[in-house]
Every structure is written in structure tokens, then in C-alpha cells.
Amino acid sequence: MLAAMSVTPSSPSDREETTAAGRAPRVRGDACPGALRLHAADDGALARVRVPAGLLTTRQALVLAELAEELGDGNLDLTSRGNVQLRGLAGGCGGALGERLREAGLLPSDRHERVRNVAASPLCGLDGAGHGDVQGWARELDGLLCANPEVTELSGRFLFGLDDGRGDIAALAPDVTLIAVGGGRAVLCYAAASPGLRIAAADGPRAAVLAAEWFLAERRAHGATAWRVRELPVEHRPRVDALGRRLAAAGIAAEPAAVALPSGAPVEPGLVDGPGGTTALSVGAPLGRLTSAQWRLLARTAVAYGSGELRVTPWRGIVVPGRPAGEPSGPGAPARLAALAAAGLVASAASPWHRAGACAGRPGCAKSLADVRADAAACLVADPGHRGPAGLPVYWSGCERRCGRPGGSWVDVLATADGYEVTVRAPAAGTTARAASAAELAGAVAAARSAPAPARASTA
Image (cartoon, rainbow, N blue to C red; front, top):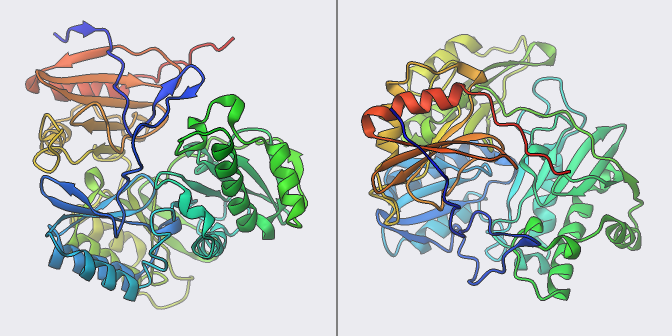
């Protein structure tokens, strides 16, 4: 039997530091890794390569595979912002890594490389949903960021979100959110909170940069060290009426607007039918990690079948856009998806690996109390109770920092000195942890994933 126990509040970490007024003051500098600022881990150095909107050409994807093989451990990890990490890098490889990334167009500005965190609706233009070209927004926004010296003060965790109106990216509560609403209009807001500001869609990227500058101005005015908007005390967070005046001074007309979006779901693995007879391919990376061989297969598939482009999603997956109907493409979409599944990629929402993730764990992280990736894999293989797409996401963490854990409602599998604690977590809801031995873990996780998400606690 699993013994019930109370939950000990997690210690302050680089995830969220809460206080009654907002977030606790930061006591150290931003150590978020980048492509030039490498993180020293137990398995070697770690580099995080920013990929705005998850957009990669196949040439860029192949360069990343080469770097993983030549300088790292041969794997590529996907992050919750749609970025790519290389692990197991040898000491002294930073110069060669940076030069290769610059040549591939993956490092357009050394000073800005850690602030290019841009998440965008990955199915934009592929399935007939949505209201705008957020991929075009992303390219323009990236250029504006790299040309702006002020935004280098942003943390490596500050996130821009570009939502095409389906609500998938807004659900991540980015620090600055730009939402396409149709009719050549967009809504700009902080953390996807209402109210926002209605602006012309063409002004969106420039307005998003001004919103980030206004956050920095408010942070400086109050002597705060917050890295993200939600870490500022509520009374010190930038107000949209003041932002509206700032936009007007820059020649951008803005008016207050409510933020009302569908509760957009993450991209599901499988075939994605679109207008004109196109079919895109969507797959997940098992526990967020791809081998270089799997990554190369995706690049080859994009060349042979798609547009020569890969889209990395914030849910640790890859979308391969499809060709227009009638163009020669060799094997059809079902056969290509089957080939990706045969290579070990998550190609169906019925897979127990779907919506399952894990931190690096041992031996890569010195703080981890367990080899969580091995334990997660064993648990998923033995999982008899997986409920497919209706099941809650599950994430294994080696310590209370819970690096990379998902937002929203999820199953928290936390390594402890005595085994694991399994907890169903939801925003503003109470939680109860259950201790589980190795033998009990698969059953405990299966039960938690199939349980309904806890109701939100009342805020009245």
C-alpha cells in the first residue's frame, strides 16, 4: 500500500520563488545556460541553443546533430521553450561550438543569445486553425531583439509568446504574449493576463519589444531583481495603460481589450491534416531526448517530404510541415510517420511515452537523488494503466528543483532519499503526496495519470 503523507513545500529554486506579494527577491545572478555560457554538469558541459519559435532549417538541424556527435554525448534534448540542449560537451569546446553555430545562423548575436526565448504556435499555417502568421512575427521579433542593446538585461528565462489565436502558447503564460485575433489585429498582454491592448498585427513584434523594455523600466524603478513578470510584486508589475501610452509615443495605436482564448491544447503526435490536402507529421521525443540518429532521420524526412523545415515545440516534440497535395513526395504521410515511430519517436497519443518527461537525473546532475530517466523508462514500459491522451502529463524529477517540469496540471514524480513521491498537482489546488517504492512506482504513476485533475481552490 502507498502511505499518504503531507507535502513539504519545495525549496526556493530557479523555477518559482513565491511570496505573499509575488516572488521573493533573487539572491544570485541569472545562471541560465546558453550557447556561449555553458553549464558545468557531472557529465560534462551543457549548452542551450535558443531556437526562436522552434524554427530550424534542415541544414541547421544537421549542424546540431554533428555538434552533438563530435563535441557532446550524441543526444539532443528539447526544452519546454522549444530550444535544444547539447550535453556531455568536452572542456574547452566553447570556441568551436560558438563558431559552428554562427556559421549555421544559430547565433546571430553573441550579446543576445540567451534572451532569444520565443515560443510560437507550432501548427500555425498547417491545420487551418488560428488567425495569423506567428512564424513571420517570430522572425521579425528575433531581428528586433538582436538589434536592441537594452534587452540584453532580460533574464535567460524571460519568455515571449506568439499565439495564432488557438490558445496553445497563451496557456504557457509567457512574460509578453502576442495573440493574433483576425482582421489584421492582435492583442498584446503580460503573462496572457486580461486586459491587454489591441493593436495592428503588423505592429506586433515592435510592440512586444517595447513591452519587454517597459518591464525592465519598472523593475529598475522599484529596485527589483525579478527575472520574469510574475516575479514582481503585483503592485509593481507593468500596467497595460502605461504600456499603451508608451506604444502611442512610438507611433503604435492601442486600445484596451479583453483576453479571451480557447484553452488551447499542446500539439498531439500523429498526422496533422491541413488545407489544400497537406499533411504534417507530429512526433514527440521520448522523455524529451533524441539521439543524433533520430534527429538526422527527422531532417531527412523534412527534406524528402516537407518544406525543408523542422518546428521544435514547447512540448518537447517536432513538427514536420507537409508538401502541398499533388507534389511528388514518395511514400505518403502514414508510411513516413510509421518510419519515425519505428525509430523510437512518439507518434501516437496512445503511447505511454506521450506527455511524459524527466530531468537529466544521475549521472548527469550532481543534485539528483536517482537515475530518474532509467526509472521513468522502466515505469513507462511497465505502465498498464495509461489512459492515452486523456491522461495527465507526468514528469520525473531528481530533486526539489524540478528543472524543466511542465505547467498546469501534472503528475509530479519526485525522487527522495527513500524512493519517490507521486503527487497530482494543479494550480491553486491542494496536493497530497504518496510515497512509492521502486516496485510500487509504475502502479502509483498509472493511477495518478488517470485521476481527474484537482479542482482549483477558490480565491473568493
